[in-house]
Length: 249
Image (cartoon, rainbow, N blue to C red; front, side, top):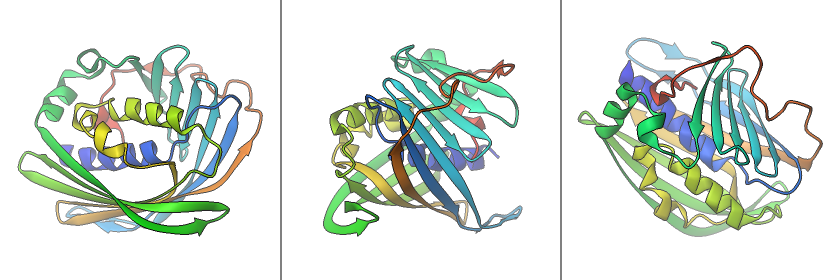
């Protein structure tokens, strides 16, 4: 079960990083579609499904809703990251700058210490129009090994510079997200090769004889006033220890 939890978290984590635009001076409302292909494991068959993703961005604030169960809120003004589980009505809190020894549970730290990750990013030079944006294709190969189990991940990222987003801010924001866990903090330099921010990402990860395939696409980006409380923690939720093993998608 731990291996499966790691696979789901690892995939979700990368998807979140590469489909989150950067903080700007006014609120932006980003709609996305996440498509998850069916997969088979030794225990069960998971059916194909789709879910909507919503991202709200303001100056120093971000809210990312991944379906109805999980929300990530980043408050650079408060130097906090909140991971919210709506199904359990709980949240975990991570202080910025990140000190993983304080943020992670002892169980998560032990598991992370056993993981080795390497990556490479290739700029293919290929371009095409995705909606109104001119996008460029990058191929990312990631090898994650833990407990003698290899989890190869391949990503096809179409990234654009056409949205008007401050890309220097976006890079800084991405670096912080990659630094949130020990197994991704060493990937910061390699991922700097990706210019712009992704509007379409195909991801494939193989693990324990099964393959998880996802497709995430930005549907629209517009300026819009965020509802009151968008960047606040929901009332009545219980604070729990941050543990990436419990992050499910």
